[in-house]
Length: 111
Image (cartoon, rainbow, N blue to C red; front, side, top):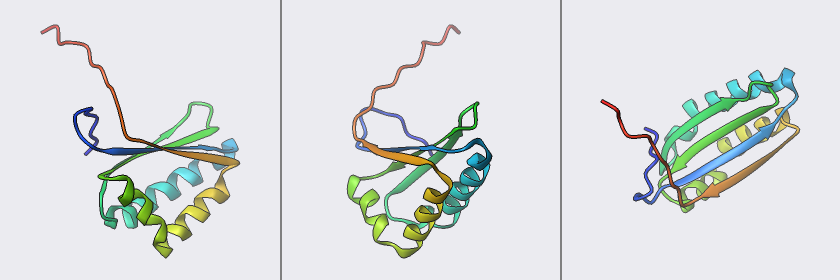
């Protein structure tokens, strides 16, 4: 489950892939499949969310991990390496950034 709570120690990876519009769906489907088949088995995995921009030029992966170490260890896994190499082949470029602090806001209920 997605957790956005500044009081919890959760690491968030936001990976922004720039793509040619004709490649957006292939990348999206590949990231979805890799998550459902590989990443969910990795220690420390919490959640993943994929977003496609309205112009179809950006696919963003918002993933959460219990620790920075858990996220970094996944790259030692050959299956993860294979999936990431294929994901990169669909993109013009990409930029993964890890975040360890968050703030969020919700309006109060009027009810």
